[in-house]
Amino acid sequence: FPDGEMQATGYSASVFENKLYLGVSNGAYVAPWQSYYDPELGPVFKKVNGSDGQVWSLNSAGGELVMGHHEGSFILHDQHSRLLSAEPGAWTFVTMSEEYMLGGTYTGLVLYRKEAGRWVFDRKLEGLKESCRIMVRDEDGSVWVSHPYRGLYHIKWSAEHKYDLNIRFFNQDNGLPTNLNNYVFQIAGKAVFTTEKGVFQYDRSIDRFVPA
Image (cartoon, rainbow, N blue to C red):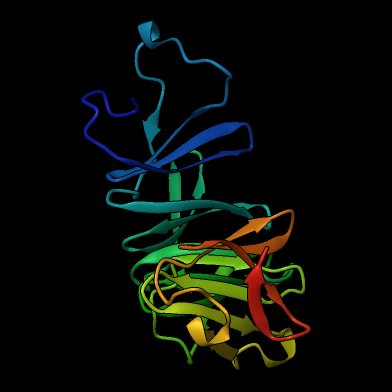
């Protein structure tokens, strides 16, 4: 469940405004949040309208629940969805400030902004055309994107130059043990990197990756 025939694969879950949302391979589902669901009472999840298809992520951002979907990005509220952007392949989202949010897609980054208290699509950003599936914000406000078959991209963004990204690429030449299978996670607000040789961190003082 929520698919009675267990034909869907789960990808994301989020508790938002006292409701549990599940993102699976055939759409998004919602139910009132509770600590236990008695299977003998039957299905409690209802499908979110307009969410058919592959859901990649569910992110709470700026008072709204944002869904990353194969068909684009959406805002979810109860059983309803609002299209945010039809830019295909929305993987994930990183809030940069109260007014701006970056989104990772199949083919790079997009920018969203707050308008009348709601997220709206601003534009697709130039400079990075790789898939941005794994993306976190670091403690200094910059963003790391990991590509398992390339390396790592470090992105500096500011509201003053919101359409101009400062992008640097890091790989084995910068201290990573290999160019493959490098992933980034946010732990206690800080970017932490897992590699084929263990956990690494970026040392700004020497501009290299070192074992953590």
